[in-house]
Length: 184
Ligand code: ADP
Ligand code: MG
Image 1 (cartoon, rainbow, N blue to C red):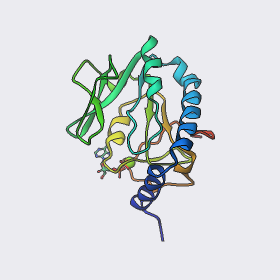
Image 2 (cartoon, rainbow, N blue to C red):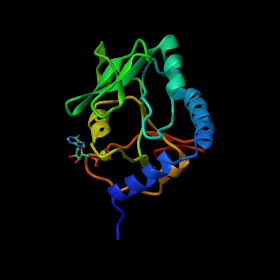
Image 3 (spheres, protein in one colour):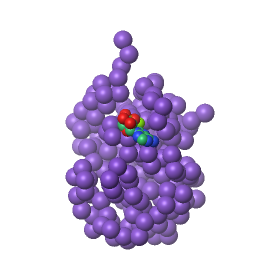
Image 4 (tube, protein in one colour):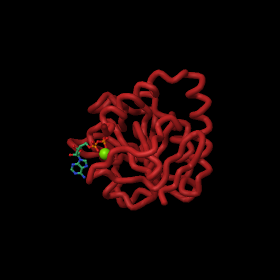
């Protein structure tokens, strides 16, 4: 009996959605401050972040931090791909293809220009493999990003091993409120 991506995805997503709000807020603060002091973050000028949905760690306070002396990139669904839009005003986002708030059309960055990619996900493992919502958007994007890729999650989203498909792109590290996992 092997556990499928779909089983894991459902189980962990449910747990994340029903997480106690006060507990979530406490962990979010820890995750943000750990990410903020990560050398990869300090070094990067051009940072890809994400808008939190379905209980994802809320990194929105870091939008402003990145904007202070760098370029904030947020993904925008375009066909089957994620375009990376340079965001000037994070208060001006609109629901896009999957109801996820996205920037309006604007100047875009090539994936090659990204200096740090912060990646959300539903399940991660200790080799830094990742399960997303099941549409492969980040797998397609990450093949083109050479910069460090850091997954962000709550510790209950990290399991020993997730099923791998040939197209899955592992991250360089996974950051939770409890630890920083670096791919060996
Ligand atoms: P997720 O990573 O979102 O959990 P999967 O890894 O299951 O989802 O991938 C979902 C689908 O995306 C797969 O069926 C696969 O065909 C497609 N896909 C992923 N990466 C690529 C790629 N590099 N090129 C083309 N299709 C891809
Ligand atoms: Mg995948």
